Length: 210
Image (cartoon, rainbow, N blue to C red; front, side):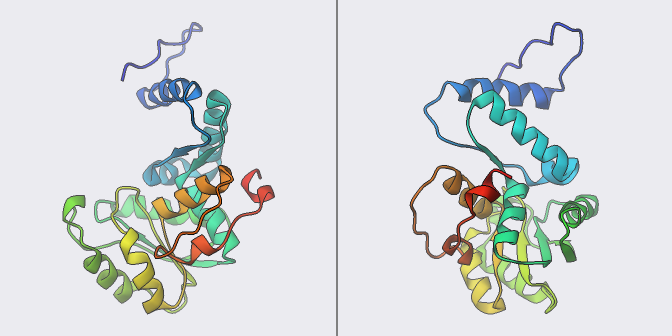
């Protein structure tokens, strides 16, 4: 992907920003209704306010609604009326990223009771649903009202329903929350089963455009 040329005022974009702008320009001419920005670690690193500003810029450039991973999780947790969460992050997230993740959710008034990387194989291709279920079920304390499994590259979708049955509380993943928000932005009429109770709820239009 060839990045945009530097702006004429002499300032230079970072490679990441240039890449986003190039992609946004391409998407602006595509036949799509909504755009998703899938990166958990980016949101943790830049924080909620900068993630929101990035989404707004991309939305203006594409002319479409844009949803981002962790902002979608915040929306989902509010719709589920959750205040206390446990964060389960991919095995390749280090302690610094885990702390940034906790700070991200705390900045939005949530109480993070724990934030840790799952001790399972680091190669995404070797991650098995049973391992995700086993590690998560053994490390979630009773004071967590919900579990958020972060990381868009973390293969955890199939663990959601079994974990909800075992733990008796909502379980969210990055991709699940993002898809839920994208479907809502698109005005899609849908019924999704087998991937958590989140899909039984819908955000109000006011929440989507807050």
